[in-house]
Image (cartoon, rainbow, N blue to C red; front, side, top):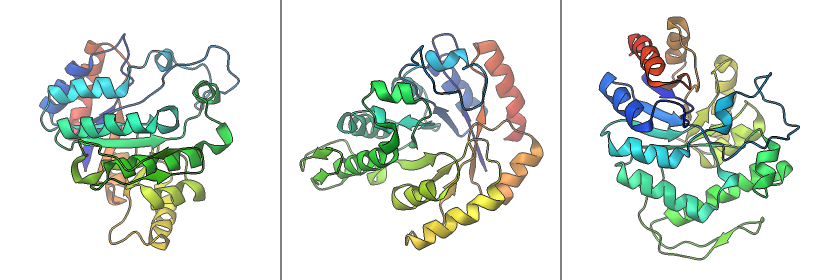
Length: 276
């Protein structure tokens, strides 16, 4: 089972270049970065984990710029987002960013997709909260049209469209690996089965009950052969937990690093190295 990591990189933490080099040198499989464009000061949306929203949420680096730096100083390290708020991007520009990063990194990029929890942040991007899942679905479809080998048009229901176009570079393999984040449920599992390669559950609890349901949705959608990838995300590890994930068929797990300075992050990395 591959051991990857995630971290809230900010203007106050270890740098993307430093963490990427240290991860590859130690033999970790990948680096995933989260995304928040901004955090409105006045909001009614509660922090999902409860309590006060941590400081790093309002200071997060742009994940694509940071991963571009990481790609430039590594050769094998997987690069991913955990997650990209697709509805908060122009999908034509986002398709270009993703294809460029995947091309320049030699096909090392994984696109983690999420629907968000902060309604005020989304509203500033013009997103209607109730329809954000369907909006994300259509923007993903538009990006796949631009990644297609032949010029392919797309027109959706939300005023989202693109003409048949020349759009290079292409991601390796026609599209990056796509993982959807979110809580288990029929709506999420239906979308995974429709257009993703797997699921990125935060913490990875309850997989014994939820993974069979996901596999059933996958089979009903005609997605075979093979099974959806399940990549537990932002995990605080212990030997028993990681052994359970591996026994459940997970081929990758993403461990949570603290949003801290270089000394603290490297200390935790050295501790996590025992799981490699």
